[in-house]
Image (cartoon, rainbow, N blue to C red; front, side, top):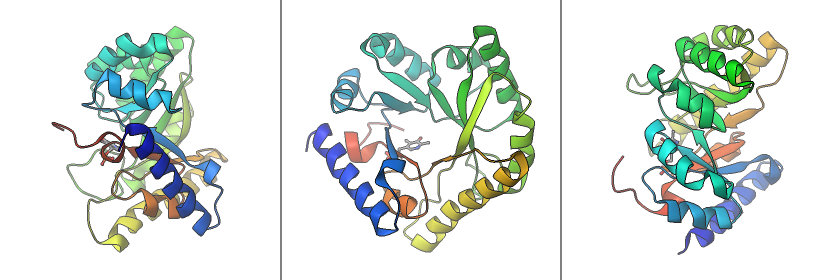
Amino acid sequence: MTIAENLARIRAEIDAAAVAVGRDPADVRILPVSKYHSADQIREAAAAGYPLFGENRVQEMQAKHAELADEGIGFAVIGNVQSNKAKPVAELAAEVQSLDSLKLAENLSRRCEALGRRLPVLIQVNTSGEPQKSGIAPEEVVEFATTLQGLDGLEPKGLMTMALLSDDEAQVAACFQRLVDAQSRIRDAVGGGYDELSMGMSGDFRLAVAHGSTCVRIGTAIFGPRSAG
Ligand SMILES: *Cc1c(COP(=O)(O)O)cnc(C)c1O
């Protein structure tokens, strides 16, 4: 299967999963996750109509940005950002889906203000409760979102989560539902917005779409297995 064929197949599966629960398939976007994959593979996916790619390491994003930005290809940061990497992220990222600390939010906002831009951000929420996973705890997300209101360099768009990695669909679905609940509590507190729900990966995107995902982040099912990571 080529990258374009994989993308077409996944798109059709998303559309079917959306229609099955009465959702508009146009409300779900695919973010191809290109970490550990080559610039040529990215070009292939871009040629199939996907100009934005997810990367979880800032250094890799910088290298690929240098190689591909002239071709109209952009990057969304989906992994942990160390404070000393706020500068390249503010300068280069099209969006950040892994906002998980106030310190990072303040650093990014200050730098983006200086650059005269507002950076689209999603708050990463730890819906599985696993200690090794990043993200704001669901109980703390309303306070976090309220604080973001005062940061003019950021444009909060929604929430992102990584569900439990499990064959138990009910437990995975419970993670997605926690993100939906967090969205509704935030909307009550800040008066709406937060439309984006980034949830679902290669193994669980159909379930995520059934539970309201608007952005699925897919690596393996598009590009094949990664050599590392
Ligand atoms: C790697 C990664 C993905 C994609 O995972 P696949 O299982 O390969 O589809 C999605 N989200 C995040 C945050 C990732 O780091």
